[in-house]
Amino acid sequence: MTHDTNTQLANDAGYMSAQVHEMGQEIERLRAIAEQVEQLESQLETADRRIKELETALTVARLPPESRKNVIQMVEGKAA
Image (cartoon, rainbow, N blue to C red; front, side):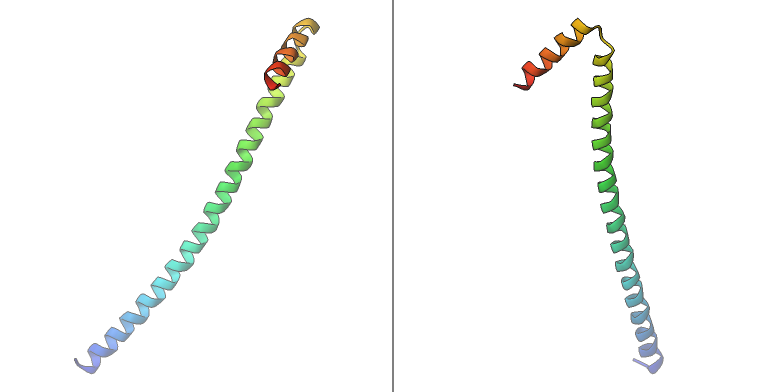
């Protein structure tokens, strides 16, 4: 191999090493983003459950008193 070929190979190796390093950094950044997304999805699921519970409670609260008592008794019976 000639000196020029060796120099070019060294330059190429240096360039590829830098590219691999950049890709590694990008992978770490994407992992962090994926972790944030998972946390936000979990928080959203929790909020959705809470909203459904509150909507149900509001619906029960709007029932006439006797119907409301019946619903509460049914819920308590299933919880036991």
